[in-house]
Image (cartoon, rainbow, N blue to C red; front, side):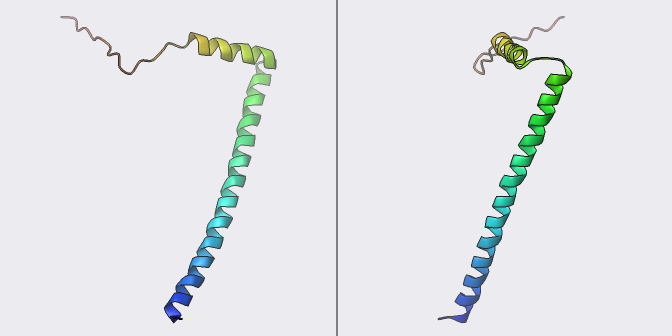
Length: 81
């Protein structure tokens, strides 16, 4: 077998192991990040003295009152003279 192949194959395996370890670490960081975001949200809601039901109602009302966006509709702009 070509010695260059062995060298490249060894480096390939080493890189594959590093990539796997980095992907595992990335997943762990994403999990920690999400947990901290959730704690911040819970803290904000509790700081406002809202119950889970009140928060749910607020979010539902917000979604219902959101104006529809239509990318195909062009807004008319009128200039004053």
